[in-house]
Image 1 (cartoon, rainbow, N blue to C red):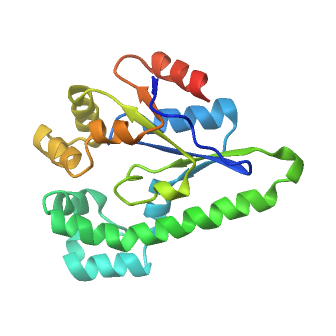
Image 2: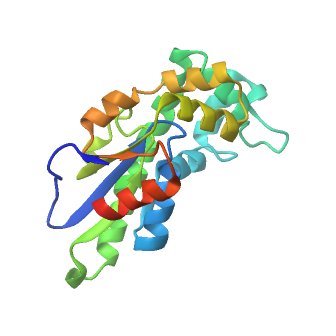
Length: 210
């Protein structure tokens, strides 16, 4: 773990922006923060999934653009097929993100405000975690008061992604290439969590920085 610069903070609330590369261990960290430190977790992935539920306007636009091949038999989104399309075409990925990112941003703002309003004033300062895989790419850094990046070597990242998503090495590399490099994310971070060895080592770093 390395602290890149002095942690920014506000008196009202501490908003931790948790990010990193795909398959670097962000979920492990957010689950730990929720279970051990009882911190509320706002998850961009959950918001994004809710944005494309059956009969939603965004799903309708996706089907209009790519056809029924991106639908499963029950009318829900075929995420694997959509991923195969957008991760092979930069323009299509950009279009998809333009549909989803504004909604995700609005949900963050709404849920942050709701949480603050629900807490009594004597419980300050408050801490929340915003788990945002594309925190930098989606220009959402203004939503948080500090940025944590979970990082690991490329080889481990590829191995984890292939196993997790059941894709081949070329597909995994293409998905990694569509994100800002981990090196650049680490340079922009307040805290870098190194997930190159064991889960225990990663969580000890979380304990130190929280």
